[in-house]
Length: 474
Image 1 (cartoon, rainbow, N blue to C red):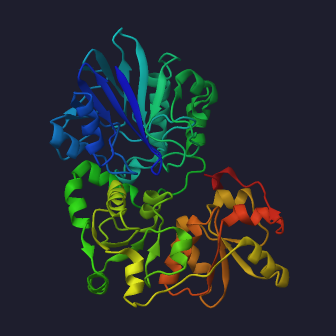
Image 2 (cartoon, rainbow, N blue to C red):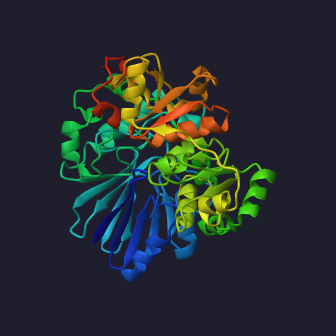
């Protein structure tokens, strides 16, 4: 028997590869399925099942392509009704994989179709639980997402279901069972997830606030709902793609891999409604970019920020990227449902410069330079674009919190004619913020390299921290 966690850090997502006697099951696969197929080929094994724990909101699953390419059977638990062929497993049903068994445990709460899969080894011992978004390490799945799809479900109702699922289906299992969740820290599917990506159930009973033995249902509902912020806007759209189906990843890659000359790129930008997405490193972008392009660096939390900043998953996109990384970027966009990349700039930004085309820049200064400016004028305006919870934990005295997460609301409090100094934690989010507002006509935003980390190292600014109501925290 082989059990392998395939963890994708930029999505904080765990997929699973399980093999026994030449038969393989994949749990919650990513959109690009070739790595699973290649892994099975190396093992001289056949992919038999694709198990889905629920209809994912934060990424587009690879179940359809994987089933089409391998003949595997797509399995969902009770209450699932997708628009494609699948196997509707019953609660408590046992499916065989080689010499091992996988038991279906229906655990509604995160969503109504949420299902965990219990692995039973060759000796008949229950050894692992693939818990999806029902149980994380340190947290449980947020119960406010399914109400976006079914209006008659409230978050309170779903939280109540989740309590019952955990108490009566999960916590009754053996303490030595290993929990393999669908997500870890950094995912928007929960609030307090650990950076650890697996743990024993027994340890979770001791450390996970939601599994406290003395927690009543009423207290559980309050605790789980407390502090939830609005989910990213692309979540319901990804759910519908996972339910209704989508284009093959092969079609998406073919559509996006059009190498456009400078002239063709400019023409496409002018004659379509395409958004120009520049995925280079923040400081490289600041020194020169195509006017009206926005920066979301590929070497950061790329896919989640694309999902948060680009509201329409059908938005046509033109890419500016480092040469050789175009396929990677198109793939990572497709993971979260952005399937309409229509081409990329051949030769990248250097080709645009060499052609003598117009460029734009964003001023970026060091924390030491900010200190020098502040020593001369204590009234300079500082924008902190971190999350409210980060700001409330610690911030520069007098700074204004304008979270990137809610940029449309944040920008309403900014004067286009005033100069602002913009920072985040490390410099990634502040450049996203500055680039988007630059494209909207805000020409007086100055980025702070290195963000709060570098600012704190100067030991110049007075930092304020204060306790806030839990409801304001993530």
